Image (tube, rainbow, N blue to C red):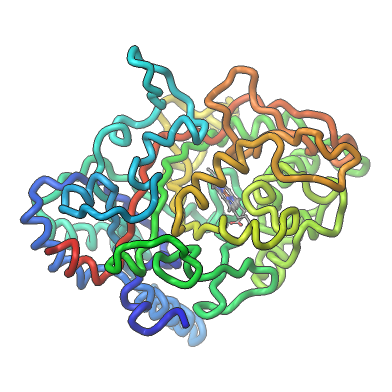
Length: 467
Ligand code: HEM
């Protein structure tokens, strides 16, 4: 059964390194032979899932005995784009067409905004770095910016001039009470799939076969080269969030329900767009009022499945968490293959008073989510969720509604239509007028690009890739 002790040492830290800060260093390989040599020296610095488990235990022990001071925690992972693997001389297919083609080729399918050039090619409005070659990504996470910088120096000392860093994104957990909350203010990292034999399952947690997340393990049906076993595909997305604009929309459009003040109506609208209150409490369990104790309780906050209501009085079909994990709206066998392991982190500054007052992000300011997720097939995981579920105005199926063919619109958080000026429409937000469409004025989440990577097993860093 998965995982053997060898698997735990071979798997990189996909399953979630505890972190306060994380640098994403996107690089090109400048000197292939030198890089292959350096990879062997880098290998001891790479964090395995066994290391992640040890770090988590250390943190728990530290908390239990009320030890003073902060623990120093650091983790480093590395992954390669298809271009990067080709440079390293890998000729076999890893069995994933989206990975092989790269994210740029997927941009239009994902609904990103862009233009068509004179040769008829779609050119997305991305950061230039994501439109030119990126061979790999280093993920360096730790308990503080200082720890991350220190580790980054070590890594760069090993890799030296064999790579060129073309872009660095500095992820940073938000301050104070916002710790763990993404920039719109909602607790993130709440519902993640679980592998029974790896971590056990919390009540309501979606169980998946290891092969849904890890190559070559039970449940991965694709034929892959033997050396790729224990690898995983990493989808990275640079997602800007227009926070003042999002908040202005909530303030301007409070849900008008009996007994709710205007601010409460705005708060409820936000919760219905996401499917959870800012505390993490699911609206399917607590539809009209936040319950912070529920939001903080891992034993209870995922224990719901949308089956308590046949209409949208508890949770809109279009809510972000229902679009991306429809639970019992679909049979289990149709949901499980599309589970992803999300491991993103916020980036960018907090909203200033001036921006909040203007309801507008200041020019030149970039804040958002450095979105990272792992899966064993990109067209079942990230790309599928974005294209086939979030952007699909007829998803999920709703046979229990009076009009089952009624459109339910976009995922109001991430659903996108290539910037179509007709706007994004979402339905079901008002529990007392469930068929009334709501037009969302802007895309609050703006894709600035990304890439698909292969996060190799650690054994490949001194084996196949270094050879
Ligand atoms: C859940 C926010 C992008 C897929 C959530 C939650 C929040 C959130 C607040 C609920 C808490 C949790 O379960 O962790 C955002 C924001 C995004 C974003 C602000 C962009 C800036 C994405 C993207 C995808 C995605 C691009 C995939 C295409 C999911 C999934 C869940 C989730 C699968 C868990 C649903 C469940 O199991 O209940 N997101 N998200 N998210 N999000 Fe996102």
